[in-house]
Amino acid sequence: MIENARSIDRTATVLLLLGSVFVLLPLAFVAITATQSYGDFLRNNFSLLPGTHFWDNVAAVWSLTDLPRQIMNSVIVAALVSGGKCFLAFTTAYAVVFFRTRYVPLVYAAVVASIMLPIELRVITVYQVASNLALPVNAAANTGGLWAVLFGAPLDLQLNALDSYAGIALPLMAQGAGTLILVQFFKTLPRDLARAATMDGAGPLRFMADVLLPLSKGPLLSLFIYFFIGGWVDYMWPLVAASSPEMQTAVVGLARLGPGMEEDIPNYPLEMTGAIMVTVIPLVLIALTQRRIVRGLALSEK
Image: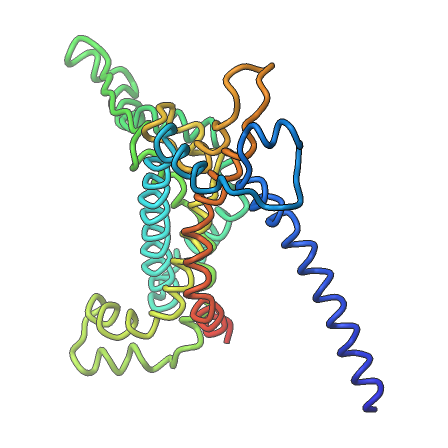
């Protein structure tokens, strides 16, 4: 039994080392390239030894590109997305678990179905709505032509949300994964908890704010960090929703650090430096909160 245990440990250690090399080797290439100068990169193509130009590349990215502003945009958008998703997930899960009506299963099914419809499948429709948030109002007012009869012309309100934080963040909030997790967590709570709060004179809103919210801090924090990273790395919708460099997110801006002409040789050291700058905030966030993430998600699965 001891020999078998040792062989299992050795096999696990080898597999762990192989997996670490597989994951860390591309990151090592990125880090080494980021320390090279553009001239050194053109001469050597790639070097296994780090250079001495990392901080020069950081200064160049910081002063010559829009990436610093785009990193701030990513912080704002990711915070809005994660905060909005957590709020919607908490309130929807609260209604699904603690309110008993005939429409609750239908609402819950619709929310969960949104997981199967990512924004990449809805991008054209979402773009049409974001380009004019007043489309539903216009359609309702112009149904049957009554508005045109009364006022002489169809209603044509214009409210463009593109190239704004709201236009980027709001469509990314419409996703029900957080609701699914919080529903499972709320079902682990004692069923008599809401009844006891009602007997103590607490209404639905007070029960949600004073009882349910403190109990949900762990899962909510885990979901916030998870959704923050998801909003940070989202590429397609921010690319479509923001056309100006001042409003683009860091991932989109990083993809556009390449050459302006097709025949130009990419400045890979500058691009790899930008990649490191873009990934610093998510990596630090994960490193500081990984235990709470695991603990919060474990609580939601009990």
